[in-house]
Structures are given as structure tokens and as C-alpha cells.
Image 1 (tube, helix red, strand yellow):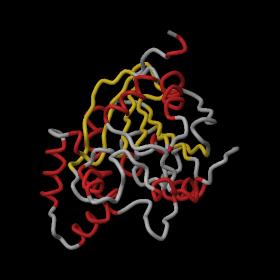
Image 2 (cartoon, one colour):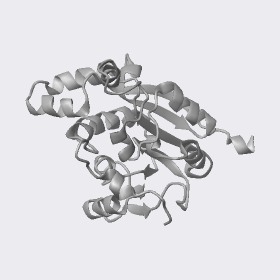
Image 3 (cartoon, helix red, strand yellow):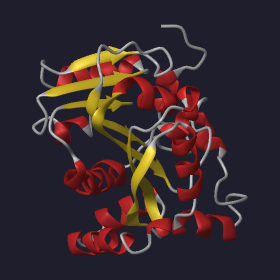
Length: 252
């Protein structure tokens, strides 16, 4: 697989910034799944950007046919060693991946912001990989999360959609808000059928880890943040679009 980026390095922690926090795995992954479950359809599932398989473990009992695509070979090998043998693993970038069929559920969670050509990849999903009845679960970190807006007021970042140096080191190319995420989905010809936010977020991830570890916040409080996020999607940690296949721009 040819590549000009070091995907393994992008997943590694740096001296000033962790790649992922316990909040991501223990809290956000659970609420992502809770947001997805009402919309899953029976059949196959394709996870684009499976990382080390943390989220995959949450869905492995829900689907018999799961394919995981990951560009970082070190992460892929960790996932392969910790997940059931019947899962299929593909080591490739999305731009170069050759997949044998179309899929009924496609997950792209906290990945699109890493891509050099996000619309191009979304076009591949729409025209090549999404089945006629399939659904794309598209989730990105939210530029307008209160934690980011507070960081702007503190002078830590220049504007809501800024890409910090630490984020750039981890491969981020942009920071989406609901309007720009939907813009790119529609540019790829996808049909957006649901839009929402996941988890009202006033603290940075490291602060959530500290608050949860110190038992300052309870499970009930976290559930409350998830529920109120449904009312204020633009103030959530993540933004979520549910998409179905639509016309491909090059064919219309």
C-alpha cells in the first residue's frame, strides 16, 4: 500500500496531547452506539477506520458479517488479535481500498476529519460501497462544542473550527460543524435522512477523564448530558449524520 503519511505515528500519543482518552472509549463510544442502534439494518457492516477495534468490540455480537478497513497496520494488528477470527480485515487507505461488495451499514466515526479528500471518499461510499438499502453512520468531532468555544474565549485556539498543532500531529485536516459536514455529504451525492448531536460537552476530554475518575460526575449525569444533547445538537461533542445512497454527482 503506497502512502505519504505515517498513519502509525498519527495514532501515537505525543508529549502534550493524547490521541484518545478514556472519555472517548468508555463514554462516547457507548453513546455513539446508543445513537446508532435505532437505525441499524440487518445484514453486513463495514467499519472504515477501525483503529484498534475498540468500537468494533461493541458491535461484534450484532452483525455476523463485519469488514474493518484501517490504514495504520499497527492498529489493525491489535484489532485482529483481539477480535473474533470471522471478522474480515483490510489494510488500506480508503482511497486505495478494493472491497468485494456493497454493505448494509457503514460506520465512519471520527475519521472524516483525518482525510485529505473527504468528499472523494464519501463519493466512493455512495457509489461503490453502500447497498441500495444501506445506511452510512457519519460522526465527527464538533467545531461548535462548548469546550471548543470556551477554548477560543481562553485564547487557546483561534476559532471554533481551528485545527490545533496537536490535532494536526494526529492527522486532523479540518474540524467540522453540522453545516460543513452536511455540505460535504451532499457534495458526494449522499442523502441525509437524520442529523443530530451526541453528548452535550462543556469540558475538554482530559477534564472529563479527571471528573469521572474523581467521581465528580455520576453515570446519571452523563446520561443527562446525552439526553440534553438531543435538544442542542450544535453544542455536542460529536455531530452525527445518518445518510443513504443518493445520486452520484458524476452520474447525474
